[in-house]
Image 1 (tube, rainbow, N blue to C red):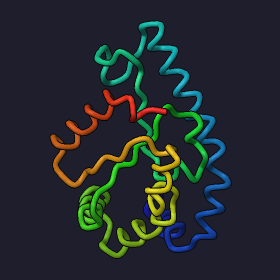
Image 2 (image 1 turned 120 degrees about the horizontal axis):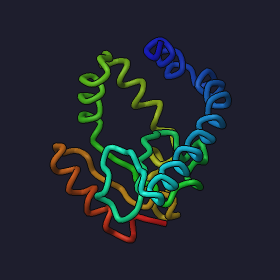
Image 3 (image 1 turned 120 degrees about the vertical axis):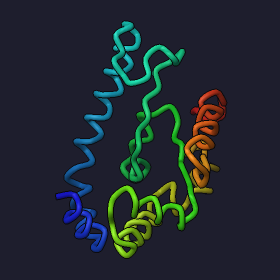
Image 4 (image 1 turned 45 degrees about the horizontal axis):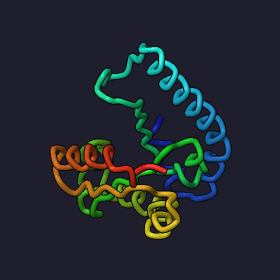
Length: 157
């Protein structure tokens, strides 16, 4: 039950740390395998992703707020952070997850200590984070920003 687990781990940092120690190594293995699988399928012309044939190179998008803390950035060619004002995050979380405002605030607050969130400027300066996208607008606006970032060599390591 995702909601019950979230209530536990977003309220108690030690419980979150236990969960991370158990899960992260397995998740990284799965990520590496899936990324390699997509690359191989693309090279063989067999890619079965949702957007086939539109990219001159295979692009895998990984959504993971813990990516830098888990040390998964070493398996990626670029790390982009999507930002939005707190009010926007709060509204979107409440609408998409059906959580209360209090539950959403706990989740947002818990992520502030994460690498690339609480110390975003430092990670950009070190080139760990290769692009920052502001997602305070609508879907059309963020799609334009993402398309521009895909074409920008500075977005990649």
